[in-house]
Image (tube, rainbow, N blue to C red; front, side):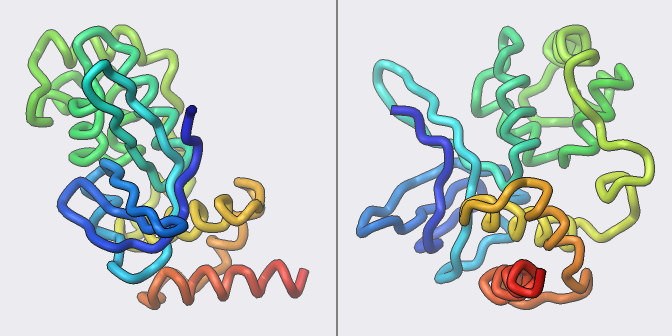
Amino acid sequence: MPVARLRGIVEEKGSDWVIVGVGGLGLVASVPATAADALVVGQPAAFFTYLNVREDALTLFGFATRDDLVLFEQLISVSGVGPRVALGLLSTLDYAQLTLAIAGGRADVLRKVPGIGQKTAERLVLELRDKVTPPAAGSDAGTSRPPSAKQANAEVVAALVGLGYSQSESTDAAERLPQDDDSPLEDRVRTALGFFARG
């Protein structure tokens, strides 16, 4: 059965994985390194997920935003790019950097990612340059906002979507939060929920 979303309490985490406690179970998900860095053990987290099914294993991959999930699915559609390689791309380059490199034909940028050779980089550009959606000029992903703030916003958005709010509602609420706030995710989500309560 496909698993579309995962929401629970972070029980353990590593450089590119997390164990999320859900209803007495501890589910393991592979996540980009940037997402893992933003997680706090004991705090809630929410992910958009992709379940990779093989004869010998079921592997769950988690992403802070739907855009990251869609990009991951586009990456693994390219011959020679498996889930682990795609995860490495998303761990080394953020969404904006990766989509801009592909759309701009910058195979040299992609080659800097471990496991990506010349042929694979060129294949990624050839097959995806007209499919990926780089952030529009002037959007959050293209500004100089610190990565930590962008990641914090992404985590809030993912948590709100997991609670049933739409992507646009969640994004609007996250954008209203103070960008220099380093409060725990749970507190930021609670503040964002207050925006909905006040209309």
